[in-house]
Length: 383
Length: 227
Image (cartoon, rainbow over all chains, first blue to last red; front, side, top):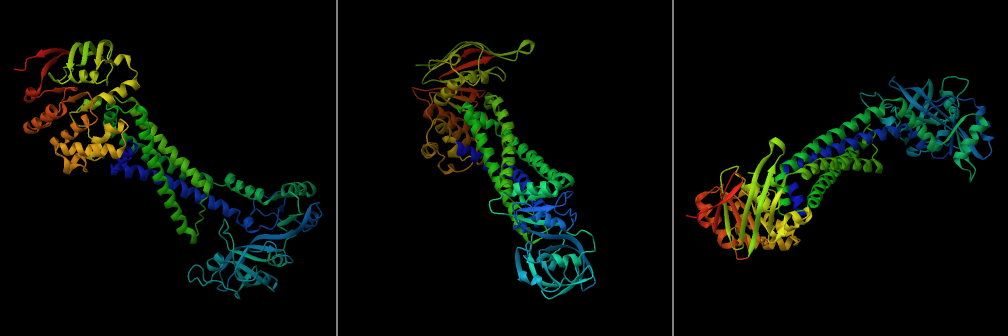
């Protein structure tokens, strides 16, 4: 009988397609919008993920997220180095500076100044050139997307990518491209330019304090959280392990920007529209087939069997709709991989969308089940 | 053998001043091997009576025993099982499921009785072949003519060999010739000494197929002469 329940559903083509499309739409919108949201949030912490060497990030006590740089005095580096449990501590500069291209164009860049000795904080993947070339005079390494877009010559008209050997000006200082790297996209989509800490201080406008972060590695066996706590207590600075720093940054964007609300509304709309389309069509399907369910009932089908038939039908459309929706969202993500769009589809988004679509189809079936429960089996004799 | 015995059977719809008594103290006895016609004007309570006899509707007063079993003594679950095993239905508007093939429609009562789909469909094909529907086995009922649909409905009504078959206006939508053919099937192929058939009808053309005709009016039955 359960096979026949599925045939009843599938062979009613128009309604079947309507229900599946409704659920696919809901699933697609939920997954696609949520994936873009997750992608955006991960972009905010892209630089932390690109810098895996330190256990602890130390910063001014007023810093609220990674891009909220509040420069500290150089002496803080030595204070941190003096904390018990610290194996090494290196300085990092992070700031927004103007780059002037040979075409005369200006472009804001995210300048990262890494420790000159160890190069800790340097880009994780080099596409052209070598990290050690950063020690060359005036050397900079530019991220691939920046080199091919905003830092390209004559952007945005005739884009000629910036290549190794090209020279640009950063805050009126000569900067020579010695490498092209692959780094995580930033939230503001600005080009990322790497150089050494000392050169970054030359590039940056003169200020009394120019130390953005201190990157710390703990001694073997030292718990990063414990170490961060100790640094906070000893120096009065803020200190987080990488995971907590990521959450601090993400929490800031969640709390102080309208991004979650905007995406939340889109996800909610997808959910509501999907529920409305799928629920209404599934209910109509049951209503249209009420006479047949009543016929089964008259012929001796237990009410429990009818319930299971309805649940099976709703499970079926839910599974197909979810599969199509998430499949389409995955294809969308794959296609947009090479674009500006941030799109990160995680396993828990799959799970969450599955639960959401499961909820929609179960809700639809419960509305239909109520109708079946209350149906008058004697309608079979009505013409 | 006694197939049905109804005594002082009453059924009322609604309550208070809006109550309508559809069946008023009906006494009826039907034996196996008998084809009984229930005739009467619209709204006389014929359909309500067969719904009571089939155990689809509950009744307030009286007694209705089908093959010795009294519905009032059965739980809803037992009543469902009883219907599944004992009763076959042929409906006025056929109630065939358009999303299933002819074979699958006929196989439904067997599936409800626990027969596996391949066996049920094999038996359904054999029966449909017997009823001259061999070339319609795998098509939807909606592609069949009225007569073919009714033959399909009859096949579904007795494929599981029920002891009682309840037919509601089986010839209502059929022309004279097709109506005759349908009644011929019911009388000569379906009816046997262990089975009873009750047919509710308006159609005087089929009176000749009946072993007995009862007339229903205002919820009450009276015996009607066949002549």
